[in-house]
Amino acid sequence: MHIRYLSAALVFAALVVPHQAGAQQTSPFPSSTAVRESAAPSAAQQVTADAAAAARRFHAGIRGGVGLDPVLIEIGGHVTMGPIFTDKLTFRPGIGLGAGEVTTTLGFNLDLLYGLPWSAQSATWGLYAGGGANFALSHEAFQADVPVEGTDSTDRFDFSDTEFQNGLNLIFGARRGRMFTEVNATAWGAHNVRLLIGYDF
Image (cartoon, rainbow, N blue to C red; front, side, top):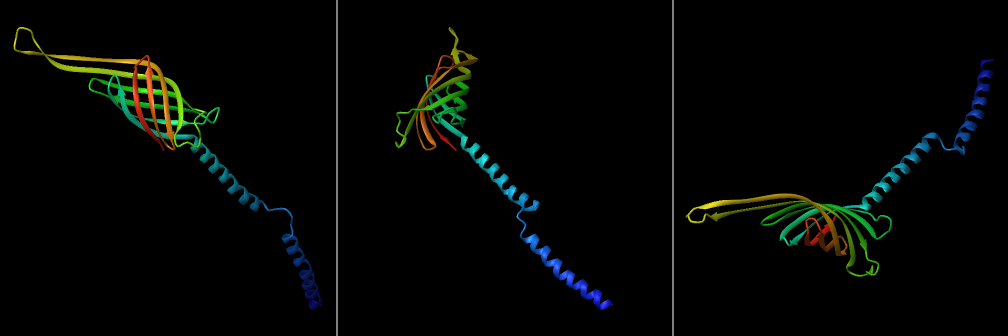
């Protein structure tokens, strides 16, 4: 009797177990684990692509040169954002420090730059023009020993003056790759003409 029951159990197991294994192997629907594993790389790739696209739109840079009237040594930094609206227009906020014998300036610039359409893209240098607002602190200081009339002694003359001024930048330049050179003139306000060379990282 026991042998009969044992034989029936073995036959039933032999028929049912392979059928269940085959059903699991041929299921047309992916498991939840497979869905999560396939979705995770896709989301990570999208985040990476978005970060790379944002990084291409923002470039930090440095620049330096000389200012004329008054004569200054100029250094500064900026961030180039764009293109915006069109593929030729960029926004470039920046800060610049100028130091001379009498005058020291600290300027904040909000410039828009436009790549000139008649500048051939295949040319070594691409031309651009632009302008924007300039906000500057200008400090003038002068000290000298002035002789006192009718005596052999001198008196110390000390002049110092600080002003906040705003003006309009007018820009014309040329770019080759990440390097650029430009003439940057500020009208009204802290007027000055600067010859600059810079590099975008």
